Length: 130
Image (tube, rainbow, N blue to C red; front, side, top):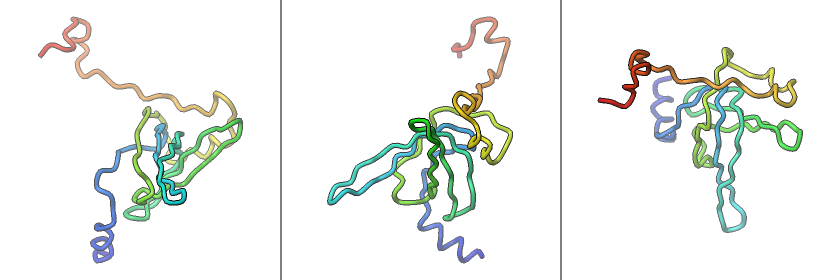
């Protein structure tokens, strides 16, 4: 198995954005039309991540004109131009397939908030002071 992992390392992307299930991401996909290539964005919530190594995939879901649309992307595909995290989601599950049954505002995921390290500095107004 170590030989396979060593061979796969050559084909894997190096600078992949770190994201988790529940995050809202914008995936830029390269599309070839004739002799031209362009980038098309697909924005939605990551509902699943599967696999490991070169075979890792993630599923993104969003609602378009009242219909749920899901796309499965391969993490290390040369067709993926970039993955940007729009907002971090706060979820307690590895797969968010329950969102498929939800409609409207109920399809949103609670946003994860950043924790302030030192509460005393915030109270005293010393946030940006070094």
